[in-house]
Length: 438
Image 1 (cartoon, helix red, strand yellow):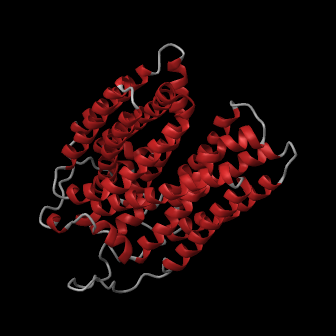
Image 2 (cartoon, one colour):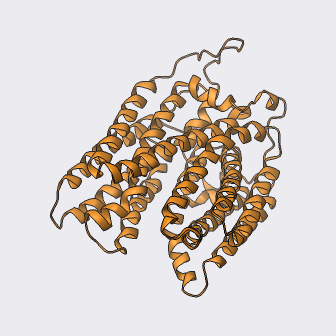
Image 3 (tube, helix red, strand yellow):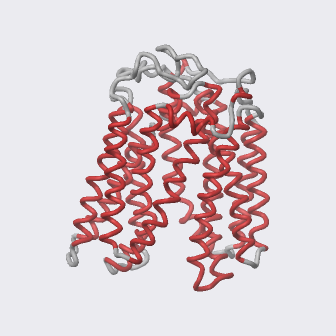
């Protein structure tokens, strides 16, 4: 998997992603402590609102950026996003009002909504070989999982010697380092001749016209239901349901991350032999089975077996989500031509976070008001229904000709949008075959 790091452009971009993720993780910890200083016992409400603002920024801003990404130099756009994030992080230690937190969070996440889809759209052009791109997707998945484990531990270590305001300084340095790494490479230019066609809604329209991308929307909803259950209710299961100490909460979240990382490590080899459709749909349907296991644990009121069983269920959730999420970039790459790829990735970013915008508050409200059993049943039903819908939406065989909206010619077989997904992709090139873009 690490062979793709021999590509200098990808190596610098991946390092920029990792450093920015660590900086964001430090900011998340510091923001929680800042909210407590400002709002006291209402800090949870402040953070909940900030999370909703984050998702709203992703849903609203990403499509607009996707429309601009085909007309602007990608490197300029990504560096501007990093500098904006650094500037916002620099201002966070000086806020003393809740509304100021909300405004700065919106600006910070709007910049992230510009950086991430642009980064995702560039990688398949930097790594044109599908086997290399698959490894890059797995490494990106690992980066997110490792960040979720590493950043809190780093923040805890730093807080033993400094105050939380200094964590924002680490965030600023992270974004500045990310911008420096992006500046250090040359990125492929967008397709200028076709860029003006791209509109704010182009990527979203593509998702609703391509059957595979319609299935991806359902898959995103299934993943959002499972990840919301883990993210929102882990502390409830550990502290209230099982009566364990606070130290057990990171262990539960770590089990989820471990399951996700394990699958991300093995998927590149699996995807050389098994189609994306098989892997992603089985992952989505597995989520329904895992929810059934969680329902059994939730129904049991006593027993020391419940804690290890919860860890297994959380790890299974992570594994199933990774089966769906890791190949997503491959699917978008095949379904969108180069001139629409940035808009497609922006639409995926926006629509997937729209799913989380629905499931996060649903998981929290149901767990608090109606109980964990109701939350499990409701989110499990959503995950299972979405998985079944994805199975029906995603055709087992690609059509010979894809019908486009009126006014556009039909796309023949062999075009990026309709090329059948190979069951036996080309073998992985030897390391000396890898080239480094200028």
